[in-house]
Image (tube, rainbow, N blue to C red):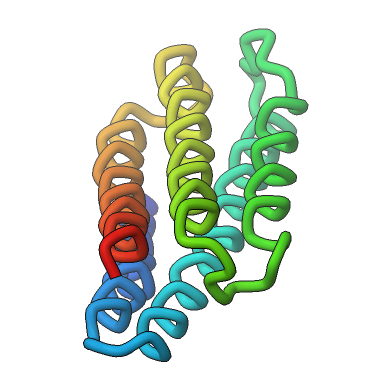
Length: 153
């Protein structure tokens, strides 16, 4: 199996918890909304940190870091963890919870821009950019849908 195929399969499989968390959030009672929220927030924080780590790892082994600093990706990981930690995973205030979900989506979009710059500078293979766009779209869509669900529950 090629590296591209392996990363694609693992990447798309990695969207399953986002889809599952979103589906759970739409079961018609508050406990299920909290459960779906827990799944999507906790998993989202882990994956955002993983993506930041992948970018840092690529910089360490790259012969062409193209002046890309490590700090932005590491700050994105810290923001993701701060977003998911303040009041646990239960809804204490729907507006604040939705804001946290949108902030986590913003972290994914920020990390995507970093990775797309790395693709353009030769730090990642060309196919990786398209994969990251689709995976980021899936994660951000799930986070946004759950945020809207929280606001309309």
